[in-house]
Image 1 (cartoon, rainbow, N blue to C red):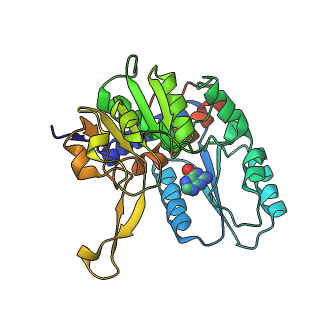
Image 2: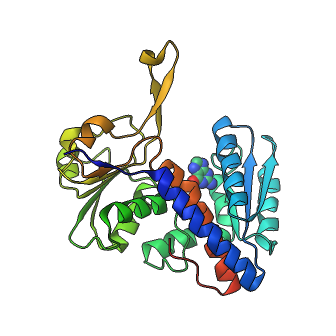
Length: 301
Ligand code: GUN
């Protein structure tokens, strides 16, 4: 079997198109313009790239978009003051503080200072608790896990995973745990596996839906995959690529793509799978926040 390649770029573009249309309608009907603020502290090059892409995508969607660039030496107090200001700013519906933060700043304290109703990353305890208790109508869900669910639902052609076994490899707060909760919410039977799990390949082989979020290049091999399974690769790992020339590198996921694609029913590539979905779902979360503020039902993504 050769798996269907799940095109995250195409699905992300369709999500952005839905958000853009709904934004036009929200503005026409209520005058409310969705607003997003992204805060970045320091000069981390990868973070700079992400933040630029977020700003660009927000403008494409027709949002009011602001980026606050703060110096590497910014104090925790000044960053907290910035967050409090944004909490109080009625033109802003989504606040994202780009992580990682410099070492002298307590990330947890910053995240818990963001107003839960503007926490489009879904990292605040209130949103984590809402997801854990199934209050997804009013929660914000972390964007990468939310993007994974959109891809799985489209690949399987259903929103209901009743009777399906889902295995999540990885137990991070940002991906593993929230994606497991979302799968459970869609009626899958969910196992969270991790580095201390006994016989990981056998557990993975029972999965109709296999989500890999471990950060280990090409760890998941063909004999870990159940024939016909839907395989979602959240990993983004840069490895040496001497075949491309000296000092060259390439991106790979946590799944050995070529060999697993022979066995799976559908599979996401890296890059071009889950990656593009994260920003698209951030836009959807910001629109939802603005819709909630305006008392309007957000579009279904
Ligand atoms: N850094 C890398 N990914 C993320 C994310 O999803 N949210 C935030 N705030 N920072 C990140």
